[in-house]
Image (cartoon, rainbow, N blue to C red; front, side):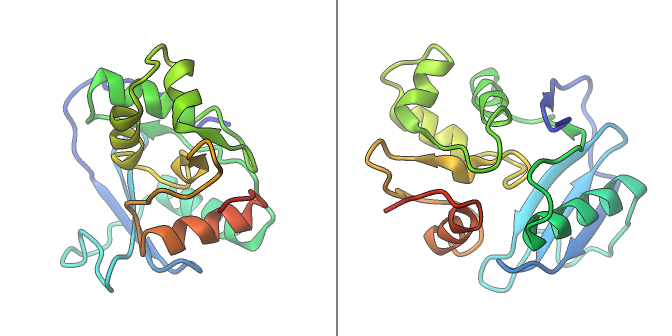
Length: 174
């Protein structure tokens, strides 16, 4: 899986934009020359860049194909370059750990904090998980409370979107 986040190399901005339908609402992907920058899930019928025209690229078409396969149940990992140009070092460390989770894996906020050497930083971990710019590709939906409960989700319709993704991957939750 090549969805391990790359460290920022320079200040860049999206030069490609693609939207596609999905079972959880429309998706919007952006990319620069180095990789996927963002994936947004429609919220209340809106996407962040709805006013802009699409500018597809081969990389975004490949991402769209892989997402279609994921939703169809025929893909369990992504082979896409991810270029994280925003976020603190702490956030990027959380996202890098999330990128190691595979289809059907689950981790608690506490275990995620321990894994990056930040025991007892549950609130900060939750904030970093919620700030993930490329949900699904970097599976932030795979983080649950230690009880298995869904405590929130910042994309799409929130908890129902996260529940759909967890169910799709066969991850038990409350």
